[in-house]
Length: 180
Image (cartoon, rainbow, N blue to C red):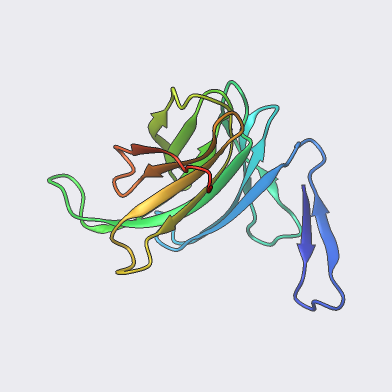
């Protein structure tokens, strides 16, 4: 994993490297609501391990490899997405940050990374009928923020759509049919 300073896009340069990671995808998250105030983490998909978690503070020149999120088949792709959750009897309304991980033949994993020092697995979606190589999460366009979808690159079946409006209970909408 190389960390590149692009503050001057005409003079980008590598400021740090972590050579012990087989990085295939990266998601950067600035955690403003973190329990300790503020945190910046890089979540790295590593097919030989799972998700590597890198602390990028106090500066990006000295990244710290933290404990990770091991996945048996490794992590092949990932994406982050925030969702506002209403209050429950035990927790106030607030934005939650989720990390969606393509876990190969194990399916897709959803982690709550709202508190970056206390990451929680909230859902594992298995039996997706193939090898999940990548994931991208987005909201419908009109009105935005109502329905959220995970689009999976399933190397055995093609594009697969999951409704992740409730990250705790994803709903598989099946494969996107090929055009005629």
